[in-house]
Length: 577
Image (cartoon, rainbow, N blue to C red; front, top):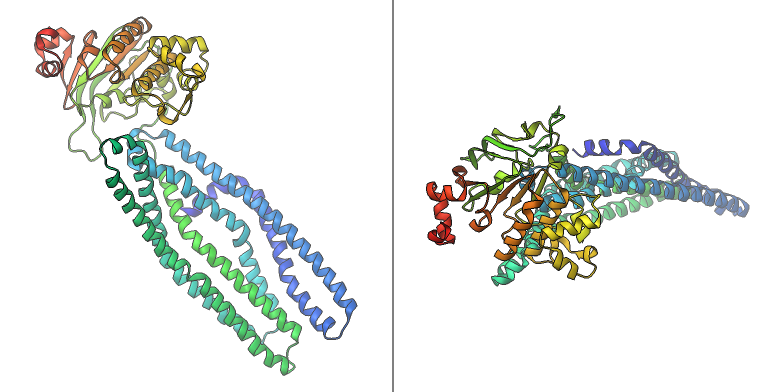
């Protein structure tokens, strides 16, 4: 997964990556050349007292060092830019794919997990790219080059390299293998903390209203403790790495000096060569340490790459048609034909055998008890879900055969939970029509009974809206959501329980103002209050996903027992008649 992700999203940056490899190669060769020069200065300059040779060779070392610095800095620059671009592209791809998901995929992953995958998981892989460009490219070059240069200095001590490098690899490898499952568990625990925290922040009013702060602290504490325990287990393994590396490094240095001193004393080796060999051994072990450090990052990045791929490889259950229907007249006719919707693995369908027509210039209302399937029914029109049997048709064409953009342009949806975006009143209303002028916005606000409170807000149309519209009341959010749909001027209006937060007087005024605005459009209203839908041309009564009744208010009072029970629960039957 990790290799495939890197290959796919780093392909456009082959040239910068090639530059990184070349620059790191030059910088590493310069680094490998310096111990040899240092040994030469000792053997030919310091021992013989040749000051001129020391100065000339020292100047050459300074020039080599300058080349190393310039190449390393430039390589890090290109590597960092490439890594940041990689992270940007992966986040954009995740955002695009999540935007294609239907409600089914969103429920499968969950918002907290998707946020973690788009931010933290991408950051982990991005960091791996940075470290690869700065360390992993250098490590094998320095290791191989260091071995060659060390053998040039003295073959008699080469057995120390053969012992030290495998010892370091085995020691660090045994630790890294145990860390992989801990990294995988850590990402899952992080999802859990994000989920609990997000629920508590969004439901803070409910928490305080029911005095449940203690329970929520306990729930967050449990998720936090699980993450902390996993992080501690990982940390305990990580802290073993540096002491292990330093132990092998120091033991190797002592061994070089111990056995090298004997060879110098026997005249088999010069002091400068011994110094150079020691420096080369340090470089070899440091390169192995860098590689093992990368080995720590790779398992976590691999886990994150799997989670990223899981999102990128998930196709929406609501897919656009291969050959969308063209030249579909924009009339606004809506028809449900024997519609059934069954969630995967569910024992019974949510909707069964639902059939009705909603025509332009007429209002169709949907009512039923909680859980009857009203919101699900409305969600089928813009294809938030796709039917599992039957069909939903707009202007005579199955919505699954229409171009999604063409379908959505015909629909103005006001969801059950009115959601507003961070910005201003105007920016939220222009979600309906980006080209709408201020007069069109004020007109929509007038119809939605929202003009008064918007005019009272500082800035009017430019008044700030907090995330989710948290600085407004529920009724104000609903009215702005209705105004947003009105700005769009669609052929089909879908009001999903959009008047529930309004008082009866405001509800009546809004519906009266709405009638002339929607006289040529198809209006579908999902409601709980009978007073909201009593004047509808057609009322669909749902019960357990089935159509229990269909007709006008008066007809249903006479024929539909389910509707009678709903009315009786809200009004006196005599008053309703």
